[in-house]
Length: 130
Image (cartoon, rainbow, N blue to C red):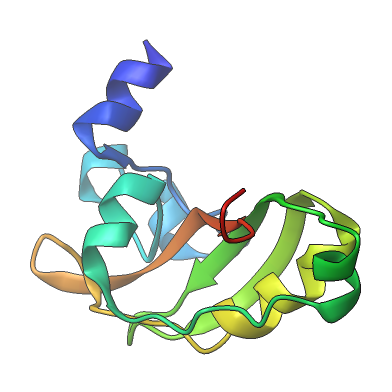
């Protein structure tokens, strides 16, 4: 069921509100969402500037390959404002983070308004001929 929702494109979750926030008292359909969770497939379609990572020399020498998965927060303007490593080879993780920090996205719109997005980013490190 969750996979079907991911394949459809969007998982929307309400941003945790402070106890004193007046929107918390409103019915769910009337709350203004300022923060959503969006699948990696959807955000990849919004990517307008991608900087490829520099393959670490030490990892290349040791023939280390793989995927680094990052949890990313994208601002209303489409800038990366938060990144953390979810999984992947530690020797490749820093290069992945340094590259993705420079990525730029089109703003994600919800009901015509830009909102902050949480998503995952996959960075694949593959040696030539590997």
